[in-house]
Length: 207
Image 1 (cartoon, rainbow, N blue to C red):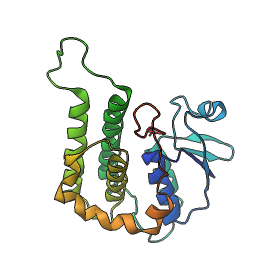
Image 2: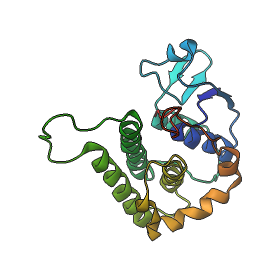
Image 3: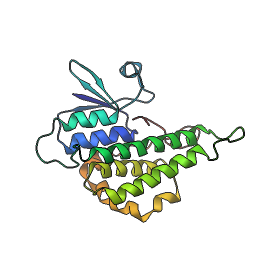
């Protein structure tokens, strides 16, 4: 199997961490962003991570990849995934989706250009949804749980990429800190990336 990833993608980082933690025989291949045409052609959503399997269609998005890889794991492993952990994992990945939406809105300079009939600013609401969800997970999931690992990856990404500010000081996030020192987190730590126009990172924000 081969995992196609972009260095800055937090979703791909989640899968790379699991490849490392679960000791799976998966070749990890980095591609650039925007995706090369040959990679873009492998998925209708033009996204990473992608898991390539011999004789089978490419597998995506992140949840499908995790569930396939978990079926290959034998015995006790860190961040185990099963029917009992699935609910919180889906919630954690959904939190990452709204974080990505907020980041894209910031970096693209999108803002209100007409009367706002929604009654709220979408980017700010998505950030609020992200932080509320991560706080909720901090109370519901053990730090050794797969959902906590995913939450830690997104928290790191929000800090590293400057997506949010004071909200990141919430003491409830401290429980995720021990995860950052794990070899799998260090091994997959993204390189610095910047947007030419804004100086902020933007690469591979795909599920």
